[in-house]
Image (cartoon, rainbow, N blue to C red; front, side, top):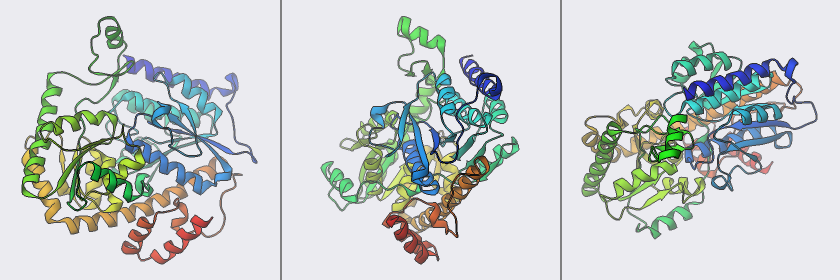
Length: 485
């Protein structure tokens, strides 16, 4: 019922916006002024993947459209947790009860770029998907730029699916995989095929990670095995006014309360599945460490993951834990890239370490890691969180990472370079969407190469392109020229 009320509220605001000739229109871009864009996403919870995505999205869009031509705002649920992030961008507070905020902020901007990776699915929270749809729908209702950038679609509850089909059909959705593009296209929503935007991210210098790991007991030489666990069974988060009132009145549901009116799944079955998952990770890691000389660490890519990390560490004494609560995205990704092997249930745990060719495998709760591993040609390197034989299969996957390390890294390198090119193509789609919405906007002219549609690349990425792409000399020249500009 609470989800229904939220959907109805946001839908009503979109319909009101469509009747702008009655209620007044929001801001429209005019030649000579900066294009104000609202980046709508799930930031301010120390979810490293979400923050990295938006960081690189801002860099790419600013680079393609011109820093002097744009003015960006990005949503944050907690300014303390996004302090130092998103340089040159205004942060605006996203409240838990967000419909009035969306209505106000979209009207004040010239367009919306939806940022969240898990954009159109009910797996995590219908409220989040409603917010994504609402942001896009409010923008398109005023004929403003309405663009979803590198998003993914999966199963949606019927109510959410109907809302998506109704209010996103006038937006452009650039998906990060073919499966999402097919699903949305079948709903009549315009799509282009893109990728995730985390590929160009550059963390802190390697010295930071090396010093941090040494302080945690690493000898500076032993291969590092990093585990990125989650609690896969507490999703989706659902809004419940009844649970909220009960928690206030009696203290009930406190353990499953995510925030205010939002609650995780809970109960005996959730606990049973989680115990099986943690036991499998713990026992497989212990067995692997007995067979191979490695230094194991645990990384919580989101604050919520710290619980799973602690539960595993309780049975593997002395294992260091690094959490997104303690380390910002530049530091945490730097630590990941110092590793040799990875097993992760976090999609961006895998993506962000791939530019350093960390041999990685996944234990997935949805289609994201599955799609990525298939793209890499590594379908044998992912498992599912509910696999009845997770422990022995996980140990075998770890052994495969060692036995096939060179081949795995080669596939990873080729995938990174391929996705850099796809991400560059997303920049051309961005230009096209801006040109269609605001024909007088001063876009770049002349012949541009694919690398001109990416933000300045790190030396590490330039070397990867030199290794895996025949156009590397042009890239090296252009990257240096871009940095100079």
